[in-house]
Length: 207
Image (cartoon, rainbow, N blue to C red; front, side, top):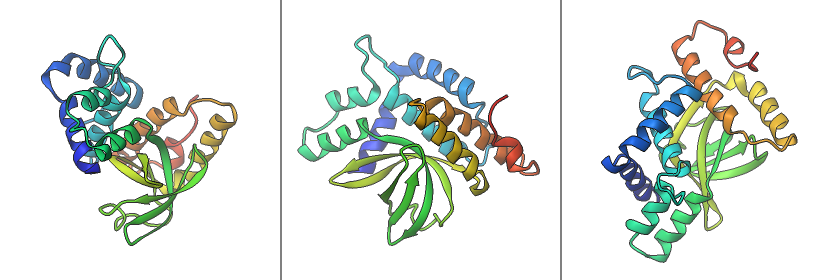
């Protein structure tokens, strides 16, 4: 049901009545994270990340409701399980994860901003993730288990020191990592398009 809810939420985000909101959100996303091109290797993954950011965080009503809020009101069937999963998504964790191990559908990973090891129950991607892999994603906790959403942004493992240090700096300063996450999305795109450039020349502090 978790994946079904995610798919339904992204479908709602693509509804025509939110077209103007989506257009403005996409402009902001590209301004903060850089252009997304249809021939990018991770085009579909980046678009999914955009749609989740739009659906989870951007108000689309005068009352400040998000797509996720509206889905709960308009389309949730009212079962205790579905409502609990939606509420878990509303509290989802957006972070960069460093994989420690991955086996039998369970990924042990460190959430670098949160600075905590989590066990992510992930049937599909667990088989593709290896120790040392680095990715941006969202995770929601339900029944003491963490589940990844569909959004996914891969980063080179050699960028881990830079990302860990920046996350630590932001955490100690009591600052949100939101702006940095947008910057990382842009760095990921540049890295994919320019593999001949050293990672350290892309993943570095601004200025």
